Structure formats: C-alpha cells, structure tokens
Image 1 (tube, protein in one colour):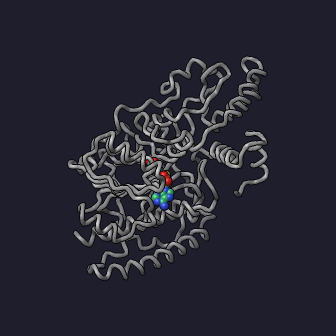
Image 2 (cartoon, rainbow, N blue to C red):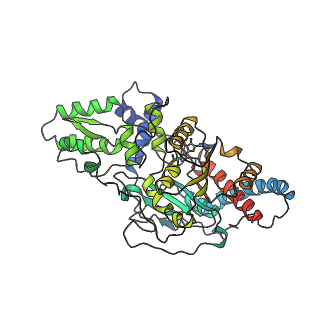
Image 3 (cartoon, protein in one colour):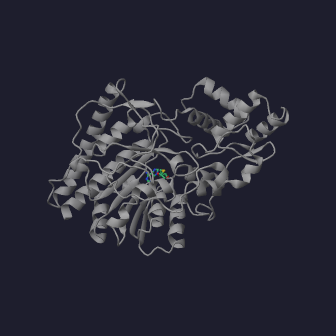
Length: 446
Ligand code: SAH
C-alpha cells in the first residue's frame, strides 16, 4: 500500500498486533492527516507552460450528425492533452512553489470584507455555472492540472473551520459570481464546547482544543480509547506531561471528545452530520451501517461552506435550477441548494454507491421535492447522447457540480499515492469531460 516500515510499525503500536490491514491503513492515514501542515508554506508549483486551450473543443460544431465523429476525436484529444499536462507539469514542479493562502478563507467569509470581483477567462463563462471541489492538500501539481482543465480558473481555498466547529481544507474551482454571497442561517457555532455541550463537563483544562480536525471516513478503535483510559488511570492528576502529550496527539488524530472521567470517544455519526450541516438522521436507517455512515459523511461537502458560495444563484434563478450533480455522495450540493431556498426543478444525480443514492432519494422524498430526480450510477457511462437528450428534454443545466474522489490524493481513505492519475482520482477527467460536453451541447442549442 506504499507505506514505510516505520509507518506500519507505528500503526501496529497504536492499534495492536491483531488489527486488520484496513484498520492499520486507516490509522496511518489519520496520522498523516494530523501531520499535514496547516496550509502555511505547503505549496506546489505552477507549471509555466502556456495555458492550453481552455475553451470548449466543440464551439464550432453545428451539425448534429458531425457530433459523434467529433466526440470520438475529442476523446483521443482529451487523453493526449491529459498526457501532455502530466508530462509538462511534472517537469516544472520542482520550482516556484505556490503557497496555499493563509488564512484559508477563499474570496472571503460571511459578514467580512470580501473580494467581490474577478475576471474569468472567456471560455470559463457559462452557461452552465460549474463548481468543482477536492481536497486542498493534494500532491504537488494536482491543482495546477485541475485548474488548467477548468478553463484556467484559480482555486478558491477554504477551510470549513471558518464555517463550523471542524476543519475541512478544500479547494473549489467555479465560475460563479462573487458578489452578494450570503450564509445559511442560523450560523453554526464554531467551538466544540458550543456544539457538543455535554463534553464540557469532562473536558480537562490541559486539553486546549476548541475546534475539531477534519472529519474523516473512519474512527478510532475501542482498543485505542481503552488504552488511553488506562494511560490516564495509571498517571497522576493532572497527568504527566508525557501522558498529556500522548493523549492529545491521539485526540487530534482521531477527533476524540471527552464523555466521562478519563473517557474519550469518537464522534457519533449524528454529531458528524450536524457538524457538516446535514439534517438530523440524514444518513441513518434504511439498512445503512455505522461504518458506511462515517465513510459517506467523511467524503461529503460541508454544507454551510458550499451553500455560502452557491448563495449567489438564488437571485439569478428565482424559479429554481436544473442541477447536474456528479459524484453526488450523500447530496451535499442538493442539501445546500435546498437550504438556500432555491427550487430544484431537476436533479440529475450521478453516484456510484447505492447506499449514497438511497440517502439522496430518501432526502428527496422527506423534503417533498416537487422537481424530478434522475439518478444514474457511473459518471463514466454518462455520454453525449444521454446528456443531449436530458438537455433537450429539460432545457439545459444551470449548474454542474461535483467533487471527484480524493482516494489517491489525501485523506483517511487514500488508497495509493498516484495523484490525479490514480484509479479513483482520475475521475476528475470525467467531471471535465461531462462539463465540456454540457457546454458544447448547450452552446449548440442556444
Ligand atoms: N460531494 C459529495 C461527496 C463526493 S465524494 C457529498 O457531498 O457527499 C466522491 C463520490 O464519488 C463518492 O460518493 C463515490 O461513491 C462517488 N464515485 C466514485 N466513483 C464514481 C463513479 N465512477 N461515478 C459516480 N460516482 C462515483
């Protein structure tokens, strides 16, 4: 799995010798997450090659019949262009590091002075609007490549700790206007003690955490919390500096909270839901296991953050929108838009996991949506013909949104370190392919 013997040994130490490989891998990922720098100084280089043609390949296409042929051609161009990017990017990565801005607030936060204007490259301008998300701390060069494909738009780096009580460092590339953004109300509390008041009673003075780290796809084992309990019981009160250091390191790695004397626990799925801005019980029931709840929640959008960026749509689309939601997961985008009070006239939701599709479908029914929800399972199967017939039938998409898998980039569910070319993360290219096709088809029919 690409881990060093030291990382493996430390994980065995933390989890015990009889732990499964998966448990050990999760533990290593969590340790890596905890060690990730806080944005400062972490950088990646901007390739200095000329911006590649960012516009739609197919603006000149006019005849329906030519489309298939060109699409075939386009597919081969895309893979060639993709190869070029990767080659050229990797040559230029070593110098001119680009630093992720700190504080990680993107174009600005609610009720604060914000950047309200920017000039977008012409090819980036919609329709449709688009919004792409992925982990901010991706391997070197990843965001350069993503940005080059997405019409040379600079990513907006935002840590959701400015929107809720947990960190979530993400970057967003979109072509939305920036003026008149507004937040969802009520504004969520931003400290652990406010959102989880029952923990206050047990919180020791020497644990100075006020916010949680990134909510992950897996949680600490019972063995670990038991080991911590024993370490605390065998120490003095307050514990020795060494024990404190050990306990705090595990608390940060695993987002443990105090639930009793010497008793730490991972967050409950309901608490994770609340922190991420989802309705209560959003991922609960209907045959979904706790493990799957953590997994789906760990991958999802932080609703308040995304809603803030999408809020500009409310004025523009008073009658509602048609949404193409790729990699929908548990419907972070759909929930954000609904919470903003924007009608969802049509949602075409593409999501591989049946568990997640069921969650979105249940939410759709529970919130008594009036529009149409069409769910599809694989972005790779979504071709021009299908898009064309959807666009013809519903009159186009107003927003194409999605955060493709980060399993090869970062996070507790990282499988490999292959970067954007990894098996899962390369699905970004399907986001681009589909967006470009939608632009092309909508451009033709307008
Ligand atoms: N933004 C989403 C989560 C995105 S995580 C949310 O708010 O919940 C990436 C999602 O892509 C995962 O849910 C994963 O199941 C899905 N996925 C992976 N491969 C896919 C594919 N080939 N087609 C569609 N979805 C896929």
